[in-house]
Length: 149
Image (cartoon, rainbow, N blue to C red; front, top):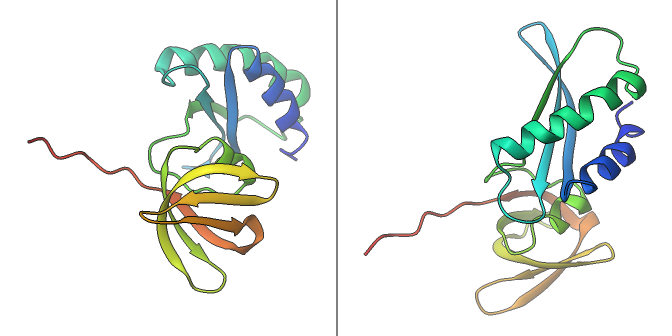
């Protein structure tokens, strides 16, 4: 149901220099929640950015969502530590450190360098690793605090 909304959301968010990260329909405490995660393409994704996106998205959902009942709209940043399960997630995580598990049981941490078609390019400490998206079992971004000297 949500797949038909993604292009509409992407186009709307582009108009404010943001990208759609993910859309999820969840149930929490007997309430339906439509959670939309975004990334500002210029600068940080602030609370003001999320509020502006919410104001743009809400009327579109009223017309196009076809939700079966009442729901709560939540628009938030994609977060520091998050799951990467779509090619779009990797494309929006270029420059970020991620932890990856592959279908052939490899585990590694690397920085997302680029997405080449359906291949993700990672920079590890001393090598560049090309991994087909279809071979990634699980991936998540990792935030590491810098030690103050």
